[in-house]
Length: 197
Image 1 (cartoon, one colour):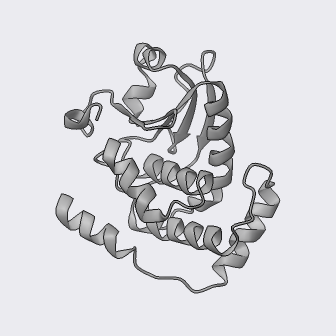
Image 2 (cartoon, rainbow, N blue to C red):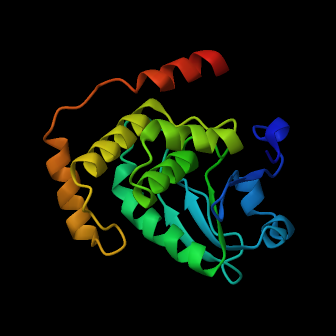
Image 3 (spheres, rainbow, N blue to C red):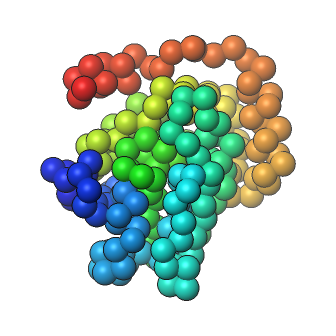
């Protein structure tokens, strides 16, 4: 595990989610050119409102206007994130970051893992990210949206996220919201929160 002892401190931190070319980190890592270059970063996904592009001439960026609130609609960005991370993996490595590298960025990566490997369930993707980024803790609303994504993948295993258009994806989301789903996060998420404060 990378900078586990310092991940919530005001120091740059980023951790690789093995075996993928994906790093999750905080905003200070995204501002540390040397750290980015040492880790072979070619793409940066900014998953937070108000955080800009520190080195727009050196890296390919995708920015999402996200706040870390349970009411935030993060699932609208899952397809764009998936396709950008796939592109990055073919060309180099990607840093997905928010302010702390704790909620927004980890939710994006968990969603990517489920879309990339449709046999991976939410719990497994969550545990994998926490294995390498031990402060990972998407907020309650994000967990509900990830649970919805899991249900979509389970019910429609034929979905090809590589070729899916944004319009098609939004239609899938609209139809999935017509189905009532849990109003509380999965049990494993609550138990993790209890254990980790």
